[in-house]
Structure formats: C-alpha cells, structure tokens
Image (cartoon, rainbow, N blue to C red):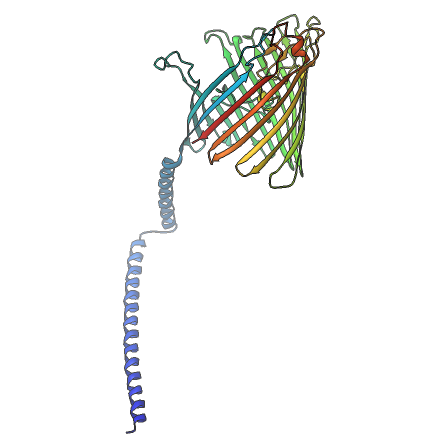
Length: 477
C-alpha cells in the first residue's frame, strides 16, 4: 500500500474512534436526562398524591395564607431594623460685640465676648404604621456660665417630644400632640428661631395635612402658665389656622389667622392677626410679599389694637457657575404716634425670625419702623457661599420705641427726635466642611443714626457705632 493510502486509512480509523467516543458521550447524556425525567415523574406522582386531599379553591386559599404569614414575618423584621432612628446636632458659636447693647434709656453696655454650645440628641420611632413618636433632648449653655462644673444639674431639657397620628380617620391629615417646633411660611410671624442658643418650641396640639394642592393647618399652643392650679384664663396661648395653596406653577399663596391670648404679660392683650403671603419664581426673578393686619384689645388706656405691617422682596439670579443673586427688600411695621388716643397702633410680629430679615445684629424689628435692604450673594465654589447685605433703618413714629429683633424695647421714643436709627452692613460666608458639617462666620457693623444721638441723654459713647464678629460651627449626626 502506498504511503498516501496508509495515511488515508489511518485518518478513517481515527475518525471512527472519535465518532465512537462521541456516540458514547451522547449515550451517557441521554441516560442522565432519562434518569432526571424519571425523577421528575416520580416527584409529580408524589405531589399529585399530596394534593389529592384538596378540593375546589382550598389549595389556592392555603397557599395565600402561607404567603401572608411569610410577608408579616418579613415586615416585623424590617420594622425592628429601621423603625427607630437616632440623630442629633452639635453647635458652637463665639461672638464679640462692641458695644454689647445700646441699652435704655441710652447708656450702652461695654464690650462683650461670649461663646455658647448647644447639643441635641433625638430619637425618631415609628411605633405603628400610622403612629410616630419623636423626642429630642437639648443642652444649651454659655461656656463658663456655671459657678462650678460640679453644680450644674439643670442643663438638659426636652426641646421636642411629640406623637404624630398620621392618616387621621383615613384622610391625609396628621394630628400632633406634645412639644414641637413650628414655622409658618417664611417665618416672619411664627418661627422656631433656630439661630438662638435655645430655639423656640411650643406645647400644644396641631392638625395638618393636604387635600390636593391645598395644605391646611390648625393648632393650639401654650406659651406660658404661671400656676398649673390657676384657672385656664391665666394661660398664654396661640390658636392658628393656615391655608397654603400650591396649585399654580412656581407660585405659593397662603392665608392665616393667628389669635394670641396673653393675660400673663405686663399688659394683658388679646390680639388677632390676619395675614396673607405669596412667593414665587419666574425665570431668573424670584419674589415674595407679606401683608398683616391686627385688631383686638389691651388692658390699658390704649384699649383698642389697630396695627398693620407689610413686606416685599424681589431678587434676580444671573447666569453663571457662581449663581450671583441681587435682591432688594422693603419691610414696614406700624408704630403708635399718640399714646393718649385710646388706640394701640404698634404692630406685634408675634414670634418672628427677625435675625434673618432685619439685620444680623438684631438691632431692629418688623415693628414701628421701615427697613430697606439690598443683598448680594453667590457661590464661588461648590462648598462655599458668601453674602453681603446693607440695611437702612427708620422709625415709623419717634413717639414710639426703638425695638430689637426680639421685639423688646432698646430705647424709648422721644418727641422731636430724628427718625433715622442707623444703617447696618453684614458680611458672611458659609463653608460646607463636610457632608454634615457647616462653618458659618461673619462681621457686621452698625452705623448709629441721628435718633441714637438724640436719645443718648448726654451719656458719652451712647451714640457710637457698633461692631460684631462671630463664627459658628454646626455638625449634624
């Protein structure tokens, strides 16, 4: 046989061997599949035997019941893992002010430096599908305010502690009972005043929720009770009803009525405040407007309350990465020009966030006066923002007092005095140090006006300008 014939014969023999091996492998695979099919057939026979006892929809009902049990078990496990959340905040601020206060009737307090620390720890627990409990403890102190670090036994208080009953009677309403913070719209009249070392919280009850584009709120809050055993008429309290409509594109409209009953104040009052609010945005322009009217009575010679206040803001944001924004604001609160006419015309801004509006130095209020302000703010980078603001303050009536941001009197009025209280410039910057940490610091200067000079009563230095430096660190956890 030739070499070529031998090669061909060898190739055929090799092909035969490979074919035989392939056939053998395929036979093994078919045998495995047959064994599996036999096992499945046996499993079907067993299942048919087990299901033979069920009739009609009994099998489906049994399966559904088992599924519900498994789902309930999973939900219980999830609630134990996520129903309770712990959180808190640490804040420290240091300040230097010169003079510390302009005082009344005109003698200023000297330079003053201080630092305070506020620590909050809270727990948020969902105890049922529609029941939530929130509790927050707070320790707030000026550094070194104790006579001894061994004698401080009353530094911690309950800042908030309330229960929310959601989906009240099958609606979108929530009932809240306990002690809680409260803020209405832009906080000109009702604010939690978070800037303050303590902050505001009220004891009382609220019902709030939404019906489509309409948000509703109604509440009753206790302000002060001199004696728990005293009659209910001795309790200072506020009732509130507010409606907020958000059905218009980029526009929010609101209306509210707030009733303040204060029999415990130096001059007992009953005041009703009707207020309208609007805010919105159109392209690069943003705006807001607030109107408020007050009526009621005082237990004094000025028995009838008749006061009002207005505020308007417009801003414009330019294009660019820094998001520069210019804004202008005008606020006016009525004052009382005649203490002998039987009418009290000084507007009461109730519980405002004046620090955010009438200057950082807290030397003016939305009360007996006009504040014209211009602001410029921008974000030079992702973690930084800066703001410059200028305010000019004048009194509505020099016969009325000069009031600070806390609505208390700084100096009494003086007939014939100039109405210009002064001007203020605020420089501030915010740095987001981390995801939950903010450093906020700034400098402000108050330029005393002619009213300050006219009411200085001849006291040297009582009409000088004031400076304020401050820095605040806030860490949330």
